[in-house]
Length: 156
Image (cartoon, rainbow, N blue to C red; front, side, top):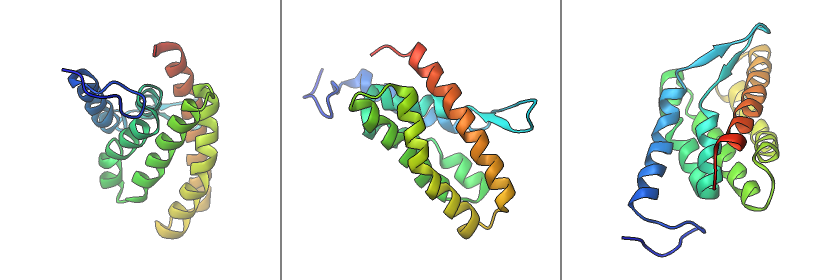
């Protein structure tokens, strides 16, 4: 059974199930960080957020970013992670919907997320600035890697 078109997607059991998977999967991928020779780790959860943003637009990106960040937010005692990843998914989906390719959507979405990330991590969580700078580099590289992977693996 297929329902009316909401947010320019066909809503049926298949799309609802897929969105649920894309919302839960980043929690598991958030536990995987790939070390680099440059001293930072590449995070893996962004791939799913970008896929959700491409397939389901800003709402899908925001849902995947928010629900998919619950484990990390709880494990790190940093609830602001939720807001940052909701913002990342929302903006990536919005920009993608307006015609940007997913790589540029991810870069601009990260630029929008960056003030939130810096202010909450430094001033509300109390992380040292040097650690936040390393985190910014790791997230930027991760976003580029996974947005590129999403570009070449997702078909509309």
